Image (cartoon, rainbow, N blue to C red; front, side):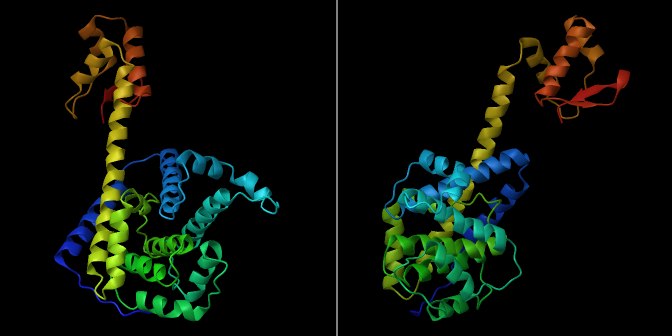
Length: 317
């Protein structure tokens, strides 16, 4: 293994702190199980799409989604003589991520050379014979310190990529290897971290930082670039949560009549409470009409019903 050195610079520390802040926000953000699974599936699509783009294989996200949506069929056909190389690459990328998610999320096991041999069997170059000795020095080095898992992941990406001849296999395997350290430490951010995206979107910059790290023994610049792009991707992910929430609220409001919109404004105060009888008096409407208004607002998730019978009241939270 080529000797390397780095320093935990103030810049690096600042972005590690930003990552932890945004990671906590993502972990605490309320998502329904169905919505979370949908976001995780689309994150997987992005990982594969942008991960393969880094290798020069530009597979459209819709193509990736179609392949992943038909995994059962492809599993049945896996012994078929006809194999689509794109399909194979997409499924191998997904298979490697699945192995990490299934076997290494918050695992107390030690990552060993056998772990990387297994990952290499999935995504590595079949024409290059690999032994434990090829991995031992890197694995030992990566686990020798108590650095942040994001620094470990950055070093894994760098060291494993330059262990092999520059190729699509080296790119994919090194990326998958970096995810291993993050999942083991519980730093996958609900499975929504897509490191490949900013790298592929500005591949010239990505390759520039990598080339500099290879040319010089001090790789601090690479670590700073790595953690900054991780933060930027997580920040963008969190912003999509907020935007989606606003969109859902706008869609709900768009379904209301003018009277129902006024009811919502009457409850701007988080402590405000309203009842069916109050609605009748304000708008001079029948009990049935006011009940329908309140039922619709409750069904849309805009109001919360409290109590039973004549004591029923409604609040926004």
